[in-house]
Length: 303
Image (cartoon, rainbow, N blue to C red):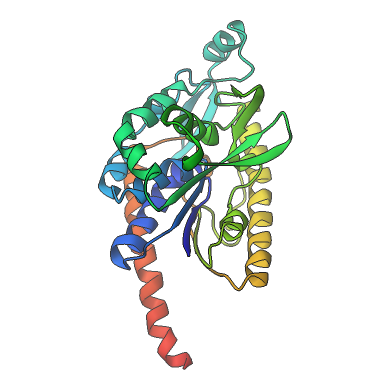
């Protein structure tokens, strides 16, 4: 059984889409399991449907308005670098309405429903493939994995949305009496879950470089500090998930093929830039092609 696992990473998901496109179209890989966290959860349904061109068009067209119904920050460009600053008016409006977060991401839920049709959902649910998204249950302090097989159309769209909600900048969801947030807060790379569900070979797309390749610039404001802190915590969670995944794979005779980003794509994955995301998709495709070509050249020498 083969599984495709895509980590969280916000706008960097465009790179993962390019990698997945090559693995599926260039190498002809067929997957039984698709598991995603955060931005990965947005990709997996369409990849399972083989509708790569469709999801590519979506990923290379989104901007801040596609995601946020109330964006809590503004983007400032200095010396060629994008930085975020607090949008005081939008944050004030959100708190005035009684929200627990700085911003709201209801536009993303609408985008998910507009992109994944009911017919497509039914095709997936009635098909042989299993699609699973990762969410964090803050009330019960646990990670949960939501399978398309256990959901209605509306429920599944909501779980995908919840998996992407990078609180406190995006919406905090209340469902089944519990508060839910971004799956990456608990599990950035659900390799262990894929193996538990029977995967013997896992292609894991990690939206981070394999080793630390940059020093963050000093924080400019409270929001910049928050994103830096969250980035640090999520990096630690991701490294831990990968170590656990390797350990579980070793004890279950499973093979993991890792695809890390070869360079630092961005230090703020909450910024959605159409031009950059288009380039990242192409670079993901080319990187996967180069890596597999390189492996094929090396393998004969090892025999």
